[in-house]
Image (cartoon, rainbow, N blue to C red; front, top):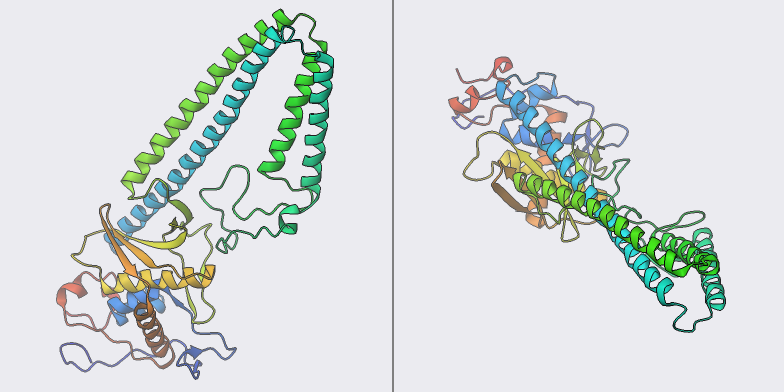
Length: 395
């Protein structure tokens, strides 16, 4: 029965073979729960008849749908670009830091070669001391690469979501999140050991065989100047990448410190599945805020005064999927309309109960049928993208 009181014959079931379990969920004969996508929740809440038409193969046709697809693609591309610019910023800054360290070492070498004879230092003994240090760093680095020492000392793997083959948009330069090392695997510490061994070995050799100290100091001074110019170009690149990332962050309401762990483009991103309820879907984005994985649902078109119930259920569905995928419940989901209209939807017990009730309602109609128009609003029917195929549309 619709809101206007008109008796309407409901739709036939789409999964008549499903049976209800003790918890009220409808399952297939093999025990799997009836699949309900986050998009199903949105369509069903908007209008059960529109959802039924979609479930039975009727595609929506409207300019708004095409425009929304294009805008979602544009948002995804901007989010990915933001991640790439942040990655380039981090990489160039890290390389610049290492190059700056080389400049400091070269400057020290310049002074050392100029005045080492004046301090009465035994050059041969000091060269041997540096060679011994180089050998020590090399041996420690080799052991660190060959032996999984991180796990041996009880270093726990940091929490990270199950990505199911998805590649993060922002990834650390040297060590991926959760890197534990192991046999023939090295990380940042191992790299530092080997670089230190190379630097000490070069200095040991240079001190031992540099006959003309003054000439060597001039060469080192020129090298220091050239290296400084090269390092400045890297710093300029890093600043340029950071400025582009900041522009993208402003345009897409992102925090500059936020990490984008997931961005949906339908082609490469994994489908998140909740095997307990049958829920599935792809959030527009998952961002890391205060060490929490927060799903983001982007909505295009007209900005409402308050979130639509259909959009709210879709965003809450993604909160459930994030919780079941990562093992940690997000404190909230984000629903965004346009650039400057962002809503936090608490993911609390009340929201969980509402979501589960709506999932069961969809599954019941999938198994028993009975989908009907749930409103008596001509304007809503007029704007429905499946109005052309709906037998219950309001003329």
